[in-house]
Length: 330
Image (cartoon, rainbow, N blue to C red; front, side, top):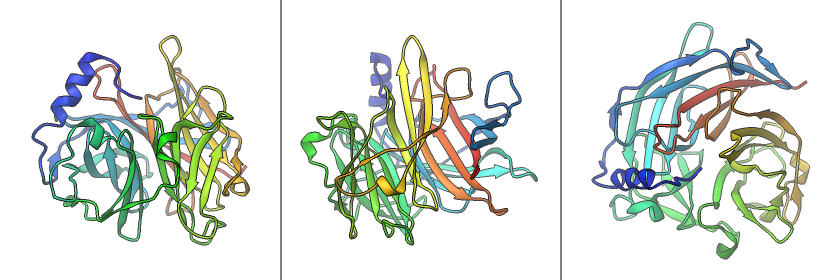
């Protein structure tokens, strides 16, 4: 969700000034979220079971605007990007029952270009999507649309080592509705581990959302059926090859809403219109905010986990929220 007020724009302009070149440690305070539906102890929502969550903050100028994240260890160490031109890193702290209790070892570092200079302004620094594999972090940017790859060096990230062709015609990508999702498919799945890019709300003439398989034998453009007034904000592949998408809608009257949609693996191929059912629908009666980041991981006991994070847009009226669910087969 983009800044729409002068105050937010001024805040953003400050964040792009004098960015540090090294990762700075930040002490984060967190409050556990024990009820997902406000005022109710319900934990099961269809195939999703709420485990726990956090509302968190820190007295640091650059803190917030978290647009994507990926775990480097299952449910523990993570890396993310903020749409103000920062990397962020940390660890989810847990209690004996594996519920999240806080964020530890949290650091932020300015993103830099190939010459080592901090990214200059929103046009260059609007990082919105992230995929990580085999020591490489791929980042998708809006406004100045591009996908860049970086060597994975948490806390000491350097400039990009290359740009990738994202296949979708540049003129089809809306300025701030571009590549919002980058996700690697399972290596043993139908896409053979390909990197997939999905736009937020760059639509074709039929009103469907542009996406692309960036490599492999199925390489090519496809679209995802746009359902209602929801925009895609992130996604991750499930072990069976389905693509789990995080979607968001916002209107002043209704506030923010969130959905999780499971896109059928059989529909993800060049030239197709991919689609799938909604697994979860929430509104402001749930503990959500502007949910923008999603990852899927496997817990030690075998449970398939879904983690979500919000982008507070640097606004005092929004929150930094982290949520966890178990995704059940039934």
